[in-house]
Image (cartoon, rainbow, N blue to C red; front, side):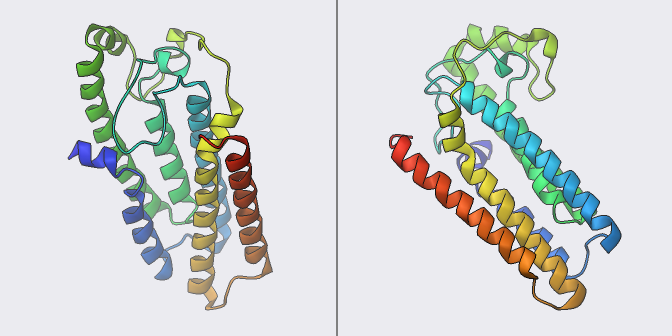
Length: 229
């Protein structure tokens, strides 16, 4: 089960998104005066998770962190963020998942969605631990004995051995930013339709155009500047 979750982890959030959309279509969002606060909190939480993912990817050696269907590791990364927490990418994923869910403006639904995300990535992390234990043996055992899985321990910090690669980080994560924007806009449209039956206003279309334009620009840059990424 955990191996299947790892392989299809990019698709797991679709179940949560479908549930949130159904709830919003039925008018489950918070009161109009409170929705803005929940959405802002969700965006902040998702931004924190995205920043953590950017940090991980930007400092990661080749052959370690990334978006892969099959699990592999050319080296055991124990420096930088990996010196204080074993699964920073999955921690970032949980934060992004929880934050994106909260932008729905439906706190109860977002809480259920966040718990689902934590369960999914917790199972994946356990599977990855087993893989790394088999791959690196005593080196993994020594690292995992003192390094927490998800709750960072700053006192263990060891500086990363390589410079931060902004290009690699942005090339890897620009699609996540685009997806967050699309979800926030989708949830906003569902809330507006459920509340008044009216289509979203000009601000919504402006947001969609901005999000799409940014995604397109970053995609073109990625293909031209980093064709092998």
